[in-house]
Length: 116
Image (cartoon, rainbow, N blue to C red):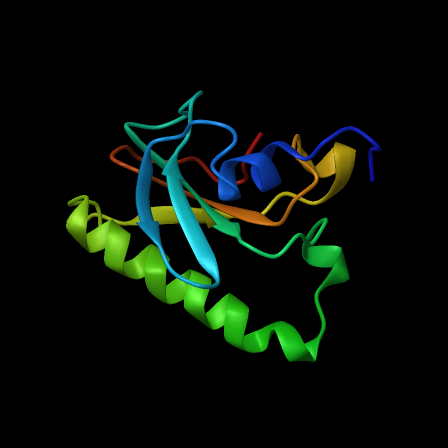
């Protein structure tokens, strides 16, 4: 993990502005500032966890909450019926650009498989 301040911790603390769509005690959802799809939302753990690599069985409720919020947002954004993608990048080669657990919710267009 970098010694630089965490961007997502700054967003959680409201020190860094973001377009907030949802928040509760565990999860914050914001619009991605560099969207890769017509709908691109980031679901961020309020607690700093570097990546999915640090998750344990004890984090099951957090992950369940993140996926439930993603499903609710997909419905409210109008992308649930046609489908959407949920992605959590891990590490440099996995495409992770912010070392803080987050899930990308993307939809509004068709996606290829396998990805990039």
